[in-house]
Image 1 (cartoon, rainbow, N blue to C red):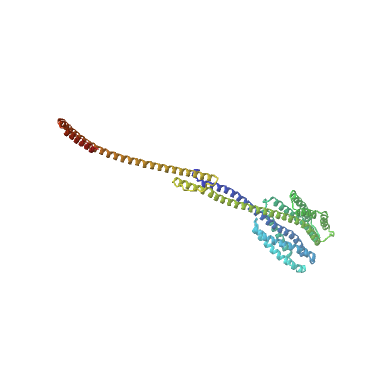
Image 2: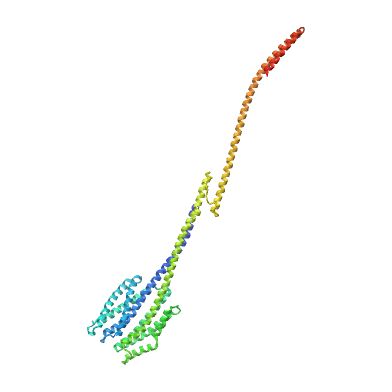
Length: 495
């Protein structure tokens, strides 16, 4: 299977596999940073919304008792109480409006139902408050009798919805950040402290207003006082060991003084005991409510301090997650860019040169020795391969030159052989011709020899004749001379 893979496919596969691992790692980190960013953003929204809800709940509890008492009182509302009540409503209504603006952007249990109910009671409460201010300008007999009851019911319904919203918001970010969990727990304990202390203060306020305290109210008062102490103990246990912001530490210290100052606790007990004994109280209900409300606001400061700390922590987490997300995305893009660059670099520096050398080898193998790889200047393996190819090409060129020289030598030898053959042929022809001439000459010599023999016989015969005619000397000399001339002529003919 692996033998079928080309070098280019193998290199690209290795690069892509490595890049994929890196990209997946960065993607997971980026996704984790994105989740942290969303969590931090949600926590920040929850902290803002919880702060608005808490502020509205605190002021609504004070608003409820004060409004009920004023609507049922025959005396007109004095300027101090009016200012105090307007300040409460100017805080609670914008706080609920702010919560209504934030809640649709937060995902939590029963979001649509609770937000819709809050919007409904918010509008109803605004209508009742407007009627309240109109009614307080009239005597008690001219006020609508059911206004106080409807206002109490609407405030109670609003408080119930706000409690559910606050609980759902806390659950929406629960166990997502340990610090946030502790800070929200401090907020919850502060609200429990405010509730129990507020109920104890309300028991005193009702007693001052009505002039009597039932045994049940006394028992409830004792229970709320114990609940206040338990809530405070739980708050201190949660805050123990935490690195709290200075503002929250100060708010906790101030709350402890406000709630558990001996003079305040003694005054609260004296007022309730005086009402139970039917004695004249030191202060009236209209004086007790602002005094107790100021003390109760200390718990609000603790809750708001915890929520502010949660928002600051969430902002820090948001900034950290945003920076981490930006870094992870940058690294992810960098990994992708490096992968693309590596693929391009491998393609240009390895795969393309290998293809070039492959084509060059094929051309060299086909006899084209003019090819140039162009990579001999590199000092890496590609350069070594290019150098080896050049060496092979040079050896092929040397071999071609040797073969050409050998061919030339062979051609020269063949030419020489042909020349020798031609010379031999010519020599043979010449020898044959010579031999033919010699044969002809030999025939002629035989003919001449025969002629000489005939001449010799004639000569002998003439000698014999001469000898016979020795008597005639001059004739003999002449005959000998004539015979000698004939012999010389014959010899010349033979030559």
